[in-house]
Length: 380
Image 1 (cartoon, helix red, strand yellow):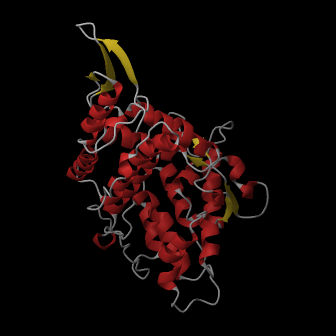
Image 2 (cartoon, one colour; image 1 turned 180 degrees about the horizontal axis):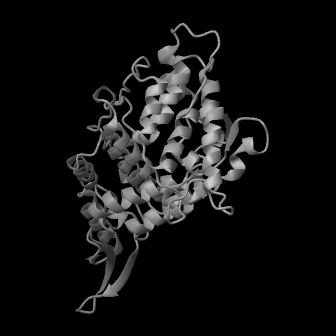
Image 3 (cartoon, helix red, strand yellow; image 1 turned 180 degrees about the vertical axis):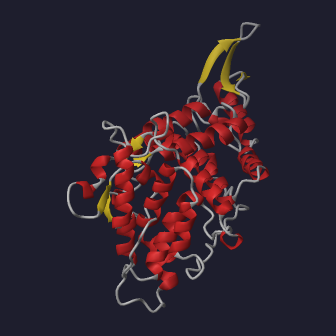
């Protein structure tokens, strides 16, 4: 039998009684009492077992406390050792603020019942969220509760009772195949030429040539332009612009790399560098001396598409911020620049070899590859 936190007091008639204090789901205090400890234990067991869960002898722990314990003790530790990024933690905080807390409020997590968790998942379904997002939100809630249970702050983990996600389905998005006979490299250049702002245009030139992430190109500095120090047509990618326009590490350890550029692109970069103030090291800043934001690049690309001929406005890559990266990576795979997924993954700074193989290499592995990949890129 669980050793409940029972204390003894006297009633209005002066008789000694056993008393047990607990909190209702709304957080208000409530009491159970009986003539002696044995009877009170039975009363406690009956009351809470009838509700479908066991009232534990753990001290009260609110949902906010459980969340803070999980984030401060676990997620921050993972972030410090490089296993979790700051942006991931921000996503978790958003899940909690927008979905988890509004439903459960700051309830004592010991009093969360099975049906309440079922209702929580049902409430997520009514928000028209896709299956993957619902799974992420629920797993964050589950991790909050499970971490407190694993660390001894809870004696019972309600999230392990049943499969609460039994009705949640996900589907793999099928990427439209790029017709390189239609979407030639020259057409992609034409799209970039229709971008008005010269900084946005140069960023997109770099994105198309290097298949880099927008966050990596936006973070470039003078010192990364290796062609300024030698005859090699190369730039060094070793950092990225994170959320809130803060400079940080590349998305993966493999993200730090050196990539080649064309002589024509080098000339455009030099023209831009020569237009910058002498003491400005960062290449791509806005009028407020902040890093150019990715939303600005997306807007520029969308406007450029509207200026294209009708047959070139329905681009097969939906995510505009990564349009040039995915186009170029697929282009490399289709025309045989790399022999395998490992080489291609290293070039684009992706650590998921399986993803690179499935997404880029495998669809073209039966193609008759060129004997040698070669191209001569010229920018107007």
